[in-house]
Length: 327
Image (cartoon, rainbow, N blue to C red; front, side):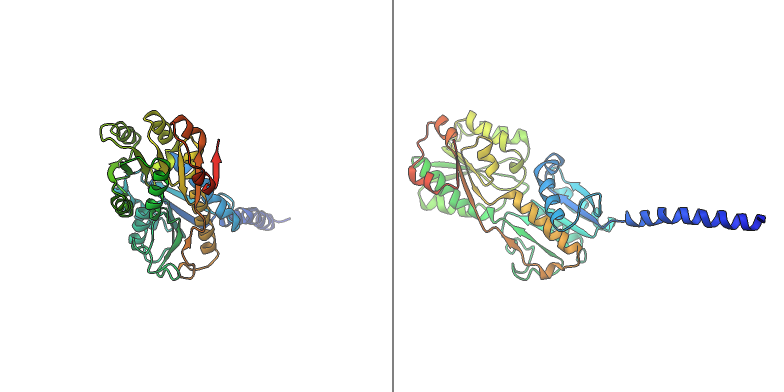
């Protein structure tokens, strides 16, 4: 065999060996999802990320197999969201998922008019300016709404049924994402009750707010939807028991953690649905063609054991309306 022929075969063999490597490299060029979150990385690593990835998987996408996810967390500092959204746009992600906060979704919307955006919020996305309408979102954005923010007056009514003698209520809100509590204030005023607004965005803030309840002569407490409260259910339940304050949250995990009552839609389901919409967009569907999903069911959970510890007799009418009673 001549030298030239050996060189040719060696070259051909090298090319053949290199071809699978090139093919594998091309296969690794997955679509990238930008996951923009207003809360902390700790909360992303628990229920939110898990539920979102479950929804993605239901559409055929699994992180590390055929899709990559770039996580960006503002760590409860909303002023960072705009910068993080811009960073994801520069990264050239295929979709931006911004579940859990209207502020995060609005930051993504301000950062791009071309990259599809999937939100997950507890408020009315039309009122907040995210979409033009629920059926026809328009633009490059769609998502899921639990409508939890709209249920404040309903939660107030449930608390009043349990503690009818309560005269002064407090609403705990995140000052960085306060939402709308006018329905609670209006309902309380109509019933001759007072409402005090407490603010907290960190664990220390939450501790301080509970410590102020006695001084403010608060009889019962409502906690607003959204970060950081959804990720602090155990802390909130523990403090409510320590200060003997009847309380209600939107998230059933609160009652499961020892809190008195919860009323709202399933937050985990919101993240799963956001994952499904993200997968459908990766498959080629367009945000304007995907109507905003709304919660179809609201769960009412009572922790009867906690009620007994607080010395509260739960009316039979209230127990009959509960979707679940924890004993």
